[in-house]
Length: 88
Image 1 (tube, helix red, strand yellow):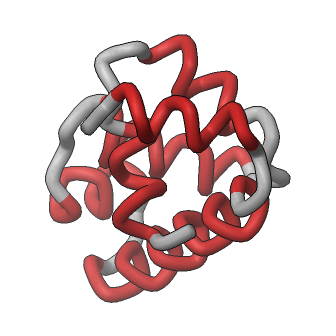
Image 2 (cartoon, helix red, strand yellow):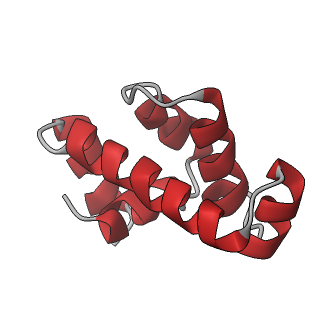
């Protein structure tokens, strides 16, 4: 699974499914908040960095790490692949 596919899952119009998918990943509270703000609420990196008191570069590193965690955790979950089919 790629980080682009993770983003597609998080951008699904079926928000409860995206939140359920996130529950399968061992994310910290900050990582979860970051992903929700960026990919489910549509905030910019600059907005989230300011709100979470990170530099934009620091936020980008944390965001990529969180997306990578999701990609690894969701790699073999049929549930996630069904969401991806529905969002094509």
